[in-house]
Length: 105
Image (cartoon, rainbow, N blue to C red; front, side, top):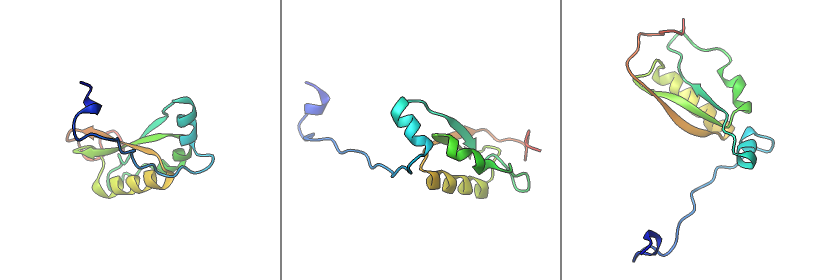
């Protein structure tokens, strides 16, 4: 018996959909299936990556640094807010403990 026809499973609930801004890059993904991705939130304290938001109108998804990645919690939260604002798909860029600002100074 197929899983969808098991007792108690009468219908599927559609996932919630975020509104997509007209002309956004998310439309490119929905029409052509191309995911253009970027990583965000990797700065640390005074080692900010300037202009990080400038690329967001041109991507369809973003991974935010998390775990013990090189980013700090404040910059990760700011990156999350930017992803929400642009209506992008969200992913996690998980990392191991790193030297403060390693490779980003």
